[in-house]
Amino acid sequence: MTSPELFDVIVIGGGAAGVGAAVGAAQAGARTLLVESGPCLGGAATQKNVLTYCGLYTQGTPAYQAVGGVGEQVLAHLRQVGGIQAPIRISEPSNAVIALIDPEAVKLALDQVVQIPNLDVLLHTMLVGAERVGECLHSVTLQDDRGPRQVVGRAFVDASGEGDLAAFGGASVRYGNHNVAQAGTLGVRFGGIRPGADQSSKRWAQAIREAKQQGNSLLTKEDGLVLPIPVSGDLMTYLIDATYDALDSASITQAEMAGRARAWAYLAAIKTIPGYEQAYIVSTGPKFGTRESRHVNGHYQVTEADVTSGARHADVIALGAWPIEYHPEGDKPVVWKEIKDDGTFDIPLRALTSENTPNLYAAGRLVDGDGGGGSALRVMGTSFATGQAAGVAAALLARGSHEIAAIQAELERQGARLRAGQLEVVATEALA
Ligand SMILES: Cc1cc2nc3c(=O)[nH]c(=O)nc-3n(C[C@H](O)[C@H](O)[C@H](O)COP(=O)(O)OP(=O)(O)OC[C@H]3O[C@@H](n4cnc5c(N)ncnc54)[C@H](O)[C@@H]3O)c2cc1C
Image (cartoon, rainbow, N blue to C red):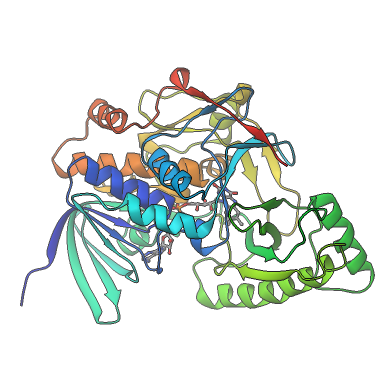
């Protein structure tokens, strides 16, 4: 029997955080494995119709770019194929700067970004187990259609969104905060809309309200962002909310089936808008959009106050630039709270380090944050940054170093942005 393959760093999950982590670790010289259960990289951007990169830019005027490094590498690839629009300033529901993306371009850009030395990528590969020796993770069990196999690692990054690696490996985790997680939303993309037709969320709300009055009982939310994405001009919407157990396939199955039925009800409603007669659903999800499930319990929890006060930390490894955007359960209004002076808040390395498993780092939406803190740091722009930091920290740990100064120096060498006072202004456009 051959012994299991050994990697310096094993990253589970190929969303924004996992790509950031894997590229960051490999660029730091670690032999790295990136494992993704789906057929492509991108996570929510390619599997959940989440087609705006948030958190890349600050909200104020002028806006500054708060994420560099791997995030910027991805943007550069996207620009080459016209898969991303210039940063757009929106005013509703919050003053924010976002970048609209095309999901096929994201798939290609991420395929390109991971073509670097030291990095192996496995799609269609599911983490189904993790084994620890003493207080450290030792190996993971991966499954494809050939069956399970074990791979050994020196350091690990959980970028699975659901915290599978941490939970299966016995690290300290929790579900949501105080057992409450934010509501999920099924992202739906609509096409076939005549150019020049009214695309405002106000006009949509009117059509949805009228359909509800006429007895369309599957419709709930009336107001939500309606945004045209690049390349296709399709409209992206987040109108279908649900509360479910993101760790339980029976619960998700029910949410997805009900969500798809509701998507068709929304289609019927918007077809009454002039210019929407030929509208159709381009895609639902395909996965229901889970905003929050497990968090890794870290050495520090990013709090709502950290976000609103623009907190600074000596062990900063990434800058958060997205405000608090908390989606409560049960169709209640979204809670928005701005960052002090529309600036940034520091995310400390301690929020990424597991409190009981020293060779495990959290990245992306499972980084330790309370309700408000977690709702701000979860977005994809910031996930590229926490991912890159987790990957770099894991790479250095695999070589025996955990000095924060060395991690920060390597991140800056890789183009990551850690210093709030040294950001570059970025030109923004208004939403057409
Ligand atoms: C409806 C909705 C709207 C949102 N709107 C925005 C927005 O406009 N802009 C924005 O920036 N963010 C938005 N967000 C937040 C954002 O999408 C997520 O917080 C972000 O994607 C987190 O990135 P991640 O890499 O941590 O996780 P994910 O994108 O969820 O990626 C995790 C990856 O891990 C993989 N994985 C999971 N378990 C395993 C396993 N056991 N084995 C192998 N692979 C596994 C998954 O397949 C997935 O690809 C929204 C979220 C939702 C749900």
